[in-house]
Image (cartoon, rainbow, N blue to C red):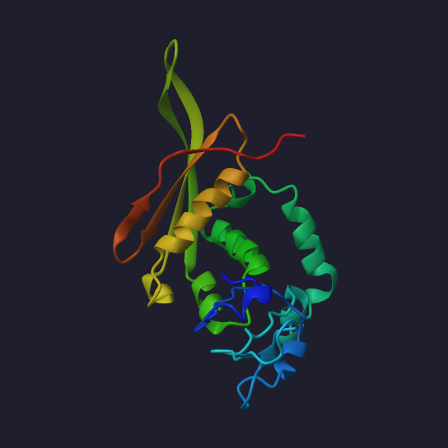
Length: 213
């Protein structure tokens, strides 16, 4: 890293900048890659800066995405879904049966995913079932061995929906997600399986981290 005031003292061959910023659709109008400099430093206008790749296309808000897809229920419904997530718990995702549980989880994923991306939407649809069952595990304590109660959540995902990416990453995200909606005196153990290959991964039991009011 070279300070802007010392650019004349250093030989800079390459400068890498990682930035997360947004000005919505205005970035689409930047004349990037049209020849000449794409940007210039305020402290040294003689130094040309060029983008290797253009700005990332902006992601539309979930309401706008649903409107573009012709979902007539978007008005107000998305807002209520987000509000309902404030009171979500793990029972709300696993108490209705495998297929209905999967629909509830897919709805949650839709709130956070870019459903304008066909590949992302295909992966969300690839969540086929979510099943939970009460389990107990032995835990070591200073005064001996105790028993902890928790929930084992098994998520069944279609392999073909994740071609080229695999199901492990989604499972790693879900095992932390489930723990956030379990009480601090309980644990969650997440298992990911596919119809084609059976059990793929069984994560260690994770203590619940839901805040108690």
